[in-house]
Length: 127
Ligand SMILES: [Zn+2]
Image (tube, rainbow, N blue to C red; front, side, top):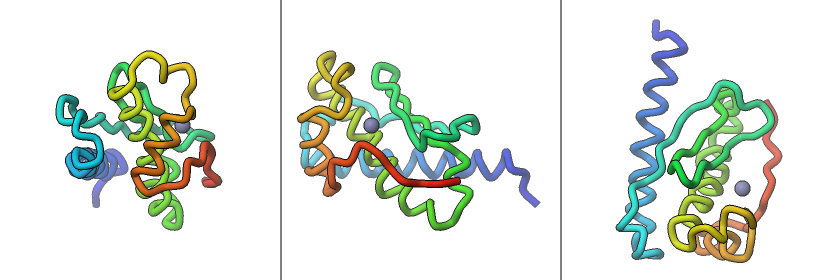
């Protein structure tokens, strides 16, 4: 039997590989991203209300580990929440300082749309 910690370590490795792959795919849409490393994904056990958050200056994305607990949430975590947070990192990498304050501004919205998602600020996941 694997411990919870081992499962989480494996999931973290997978999430980082998945994100690196997405990041490479996004070069086609945003060629400037080639200059930047993909964000590092951390599974955070303390996040309860927030499914994800992005520390843009550190290039780190925290995802709430608890949200992966429910099977029906997993798809949303990967296809919506992760992409939402990656869009914040792209926003920062491409446009810099101005994007820290405005968060879900016009540029972030435009990035979301280019990544194929509606520019929704909020999610409706439950744990
Ligand atoms: Zn956001």
